[in-house]
Length: 293
Ligand SMILES: C[S@@+](CC[C@H](N)C(=O)[O-])C[C@H]1O[C@@H](n2cnc3c(N)ncnc32)[C@H](O)[C@@H]1O
Image 1: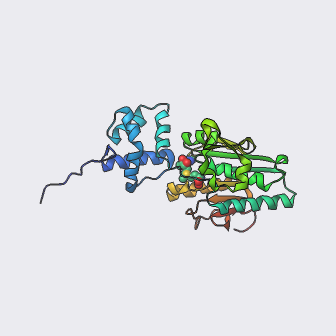
Image 2 (image 1 turned 135 degrees about the vertical axis):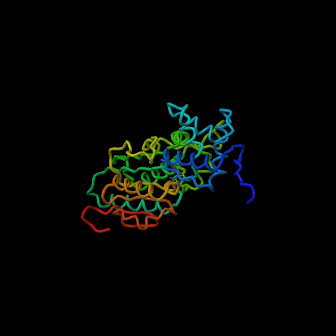
Image 3 (image 1 turned 180 degrees about the vertical axis):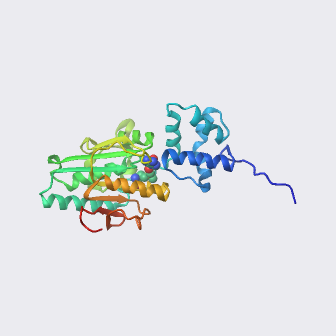
């Protein structure tokens, strides 16, 4: 028998981690955020955390993990770790067909004219805010009498840096290129002088949106209302199947009967048995009480 090979700890982006160190860290991240990190994510994780380790003079993932569990009583570093790890890719009017459907729903409600003039929408996992503002633009454009409606949009994320950016509502002008021209003209203010090349979401849309840090992994969410529509798009893909099912089930609890759940293009609900009926590409309506899915 030859010598027993002891696996070398590998260094990626200057961060040294044995397989075991990485696995234990991934378990910790999963417990905190729901984000599932398998071995293939290791280079990405090390690259994203490199600055955080450097800040403390650590070279091993284990040292940083110990820091988070033993020397971070207020959880400040945990917040920074989460901010560094999340993937925040987003766009205005991403998956534009969802906004077409939202508009159709609004017009139908307005035309029916019998329900309350009250609209509640949640962008869960809003990243830097483009999704929530796209919802606001769609509502304002779809309801010419929006001033007579009580409209609130809750936009939440686990990432505090993204939330701060979202709340500022300032974007490079080219990011707004995916907003239809008429809406762009109506809802953005163009920056001048030092702000040239930037656009800011104007007050008409911004005042509809409230931003909050909500971790979808938490057992309960600090929300006491039910929504007409929930957008939770391109967030569940980071969770494992069990957590996806748990979160979808709880999102459905937060929907009004007849309300719609919008998921990302790769987040199929097949087989989840959640009391939802498909109404579009990855859009599902909560089946009113007593009706069949
Ligand atoms: C890829 S972005 C999607 C943004 C937007 N919904 C869209 O589709 O364009 C995923 C977002 O989910 C957030 N996220 C990840 N885990 C989360 C959790 N446990 N609770 C809340 N938000 C989470 C990330 O911070 C990130 O901003």
